[in-house]
Length: 385
Image (tube, rainbow, N blue to C red; front, side):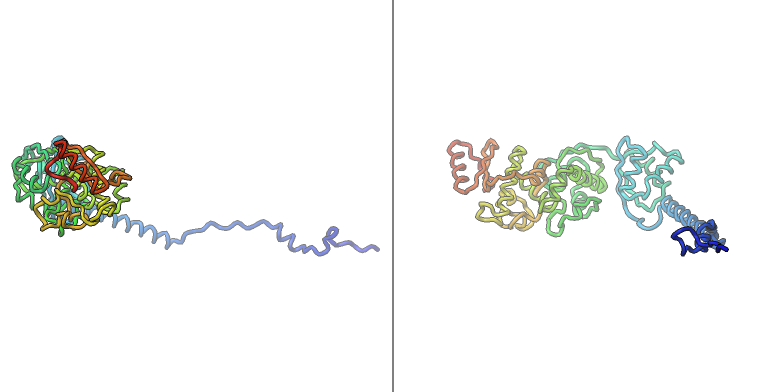
């Protein structure tokens, strides 16, 4: 009798039948994760608590803002509302001055109260402890007090000269103006960088020369707004190209304005190209190129500045003076930032027709002077010698 063949197919003598059976069994599906009831309750309660805290915070901050209470209050704010400003623009001015903390909240308040479009132009002094209602009341009833006057601030004007101009125009008194120049707080970066302790006037050279419209009722508020407007005018002149040049320069903002004031004093009648050459001359002197007295700029106009006990006199003070000697024009500021490249002159003079003559050597400089004298073109004040 033949034996029954119970082996698996050929060449599979050692196959584990149990494994085959196991592999053919369908996999059991995993049950979906079920969040415990306690965890659901914890998340739900936490969400409610967080939402409640946020809502309470918003309500508290909003109420404090509306009532004018809370941290940072008790500060005096001077605000200029120009004629024709919208509520949106007025809200921005109020925020910038520190009178309010939230522009949108004040705009919504004005809309809901029916005050939108009813605010008056003028100069206001707020204590930021007052609430929205009092603030709006002031804006509607205390405006239009100040008339405007036009004042031209000339290039190279000094603080003393600007004080006289503003006083004569009825903008403010000299004493109020000088007090603001010395002590006024301005939200402008370069003001904080001025080495005020070294200077006679902190803002000398920083009040940009231009023609302005100022409010006029002879108050310290008008003095503050006038100074702020001139500072912001200077700030606005620095475009991307100038700021890029400043960032690459080894000279600070204060030093650039100081150099620009010297360039202005020496070349007020010069073209942009001539100013850039004058700038190159002074930088060459600072760096000792072809200059036998590398630490002295020897700029004649600097000797006329009446303050500082010689600290502004570039015949006595090495390098740049401690600060500007007048307000430079935009052309002179650009010259200080972009001096003529590859220009090696270290001497220059002008003739009586305001023509410029540059030389690399003292001998050449003296020969130019001799020629101008022989031609009847010599100017009594010798510049740059």
